[in-house]
Image (cartoon, rainbow, N blue to C red; front, side, top):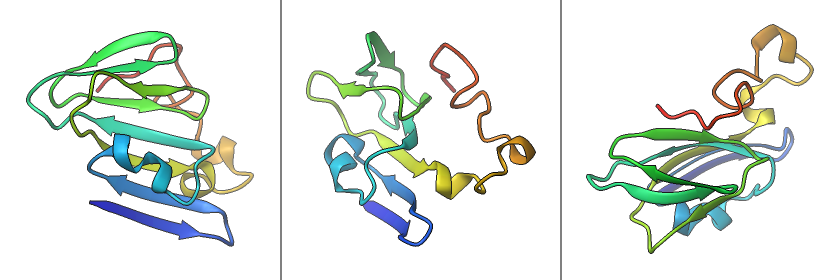
Length: 114
């Protein structure tokens, strides 16, 4: 299942998919995307984020930004993802008031794992 809300006027996007590996290229906005990637499987799923190989354990969630390159390894199981861009989650010119650059996406050097 893939769902997308896209506001062309604001150039904002919010999307949901049960299989990000298959659906990533089908969203209308492909650049500037941040995402939650959730392993809802019972097995771990191998990923590569930039140069770091990661075994996403069952029920773990990672967050990635548009600065990172995510690769799906070894014929992956489906991963659920919530994707959106800055115009969707952050009021334009109000970063200091609502804290868009928080620890989940841009506030750490490590990949946040929930």
